[in-house]
Amino acid sequence: MKGVELYARVRRAVSVEGLSRREAARRFGIDPRTVAKMLAFSVPPGYRRSKPPVRPKLDPFTGIIDRILDEDKRRPAKQRHTSKRIFERLRDEHGYGGGITIVKDYVHERRHRQQEMFVPLRHDPGHAQADFGEALAVIGGVERKIHFFAMDLPHSDGGFVQAYPAETAEAFCAGHNAAFSFFGGVPRSILYDNTRLAVARILGDGRRQRTRVFSELQSHYLFADRFGRPGKGNDKGKVEGLIGLARRNYLVPIPRAADFEALNARLLEDCRRRLGDRLRGHEETIGERIERDRAAFLSLPPAPYDACEKKPAQVSSLSLVRYRSNDYSVPTAYGHREVLVRGYVHQVVISCGAEVIARHPRSYEREDFVFDPLHYLALLEQKIGALDQAAPLAGWDLPEEFTALRRLLEARMGKPGKREYVQVLRLLEMFCFEDVLAGVRSAIERGAIGFDAVKHLVLCRIERRPPRLDLTVYPYLPHASVATTSARAYMDLLAGTPS
Image (cartoon, rainbow, N blue to C red):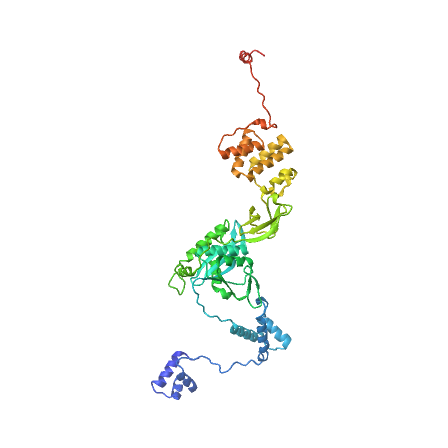
């Protein structure tokens, strides 16, 4: 290919110096037809194909390749034909005798032409997009997968991210509560993918049947919902970009935190720090642009939505309630009764009627047992023989003073001493742990080993009065016999006279 410099010299010789095309061809050693092309173009036009290339071996089979690629559009992305597989089918099923390279080139060109095109969109203030992402984090010294809720404001690029143990309905609702609090208002509409947390079913005409929890959330905050096309993540590209940004920046290196509360505090600080960024194509910072979003927001309701999943359940004969494959204990007085379980992100609350009867930390294991030992003490007082094998007490780490008290009670009273020990533990149902522990220590120091003595000492501590123990109410304690001593016996003792 002739260079631009030669083009300039030939064009100048003919157009300015007046050389003929034939003479210019002789001077520069080129074909006259090349001189004509140089006069037609100021720079080399490059190679121009006058008609598509002929592929005598492949052309009879291009229709088959096109049909295979069209059918692949309706197949899962991971189960579509590769170029090699198309070549093998052409060879084995249709008698193709050419090479694989030309097949690969045609498939590549065809797929390149089929790539989807997009329309640039404008984003009005007051609207949002929401989704979940996944990452790794070390929580409490254990590396685990976390699911983080992200909400993006496309107009201002304001973003909010919070991490949760699992992608559940209660985490979905808690994420909305926290995001609305962070932004200071409720977006007029929120765009989602077709997550099962919000969409129970897509009907034949494309309408969505919402889940009960999502309908309650929407009714509480009054925002409008919008849903992207199934399998089209680009419909909510802004929040997808925020998820990628958070994963690459907020969560690299892998974060370490004592618990989710500490991790979320760091993520919240990262979101606030980003408000000072000025993005490409904008003269204002994100924080300055977000004010227009806030001006268009709906007002926050007086109280946040109760972000939990509600499930009816029945207490078993073991005083356990099952929720999400795990069993949680309730007081044995509520055995075999109907209860309502409210599953929050980090706790499980169990109610019977209007009364809350149990609160537990939420377990995300499977087939786990979560006990509160206090729930079983009333039953153990009646069935004292089960004390040493009671599973709810197995992991109860009590101070050494309680063990010492039980040992003394059983040494002095035998089996009834076990029941007295359980009665002492039942004081924890009414009084705080520190007061009961102080009462046990004081009873051991005074040698007043018994439930009544411990209870009396606990009450004296709470009421800030000195203890007045009447040992006549403890018939099992050793009695001291004090006789009256005569003056003569005392004088004889001083004189050394044997009595």
